[in-house]
Length: 104
Image 1 (cartoon, rainbow, N blue to C red):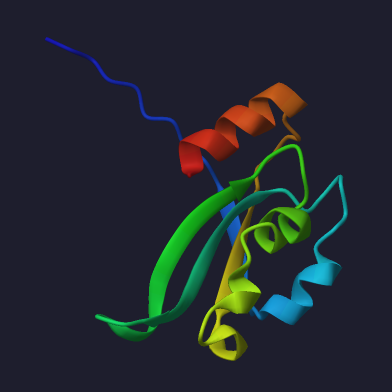
Image 2: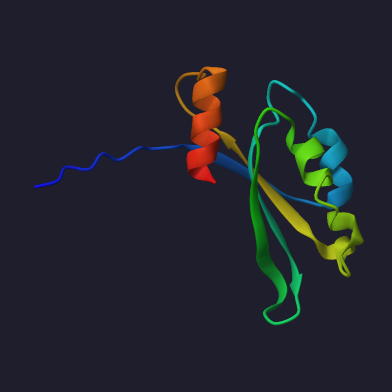
């Protein structure tokens, strides 16, 4: 008999943000986590999940801007949801990084 452990990761989601809002997500102590990008897809239509990513050891604003979403054909309608780790204690930087990896 195999016993598996459940690891609970609490994430507080915010959004949607638009690409021009990313400049506000640069607080190095607070703006880390995972994100989802929604937009237009040629097969599946508009407002669909395009990408899931993480911002670890850099801010969400910096990480998302590195991916060049502004040059998509529908960048005005791209929506970004950000998720920050949430819970009863503040984890160490190493634990924070592990949790972000697991969540992604």
